[in-house]
Structures are given as C-alpha cells and as structure tokens.
Amino acid sequence: MVQVVPYLIFAHSKEVLNFYEKLGAKVIEWSEIFGRFKCPYVISWMISGE
Image (cartoon, rainbow, N blue to C red; front, side, top):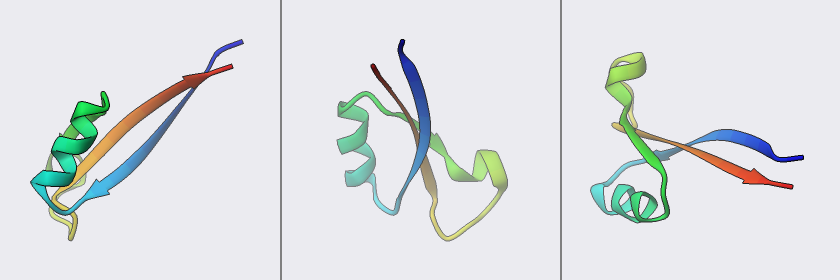
C-alpha cells in the first residue's frame, strides 16, 4: 500500500525555494493562499512510500 503524505515547508529566500524545487517540490506563493504573512513562500511537498 502506498501512502501519500502532504506537508508544508516555509521558505524565507529564493535560494531555499530553488533547492526544494530541484527535489521535486511544488512551490506556491504564500500570499496566493492566505494573504501576507512573515514567510513569503510556502512549499507543498508530497512523499509516497510503502
């Protein structure tokens, strides 16, 4: 059985975003979801395993 686990990683800089994008993360601007917060970006990432 394969489980998919969504979670969020908050990034404060473009360098961090670029790192996670290379790992296959989906990067979304934080303001698009909840408005303005301290963290400008949120990374939503899903992991599948057995």
